[in-house]
Image (cartoon, rainbow, N blue to C red; front, side):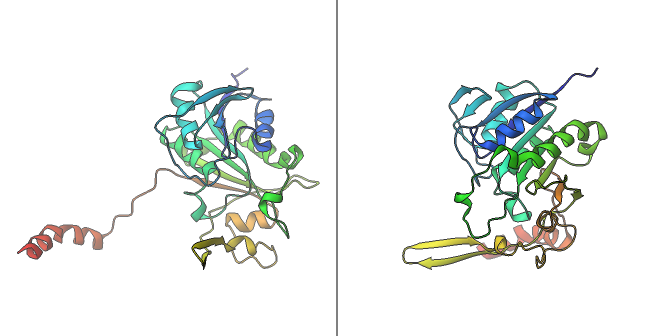
Length: 268
């Protein structure tokens, strides 16, 4: 019998959130799980990093007064055993589209793990808002059933299958559970970006208008994108890489070659 997986689990909603508890309990059935998670909600903090963070013991592991990136660094370098896998989530709210990848604390935890050469899975739950605001959502452990099921499946099978030979991390977005398990679609992040801003006196209000058009009958995102898959009730799994790639091209090379000559001419 093979040894159980060692998993480092974190999130950005905070160590006392319903989503991390649900995911911990599901993963712990087949793996050794060490939780190193923010003490408080750190949503949308990106890859912000601290120079020093306070740490306290928690019934699930360690609560860190810092960001998800702090938690991954602290967990991988100091607090936890060497994990086979880092899991971030389950986030209360979807993380869909290219523009979210650098903003989400959940995704950023997975990216931080990638720089340590540790495979990672970031899992988020899509919750349709309807006529309510996100602050009014009250999720129960049962709401995470689909998310915990697919994350456990990927944690158990993706490593041996060689998935992470081709991807640094998986961005997993899951609809709310239905009667039957949802199918999985391998997707790419949507390129849509619809941030808007409106000034009101001394304040500027920022609005993400993408979430206003999530009706599966009219959603404009093309087939194969993460947002369309989730809106239509499928589990989206986007295999992604880190660090970011560099795109060399001849025009920029030509500018670099003439830089010193141009600067010298300007100084004369």
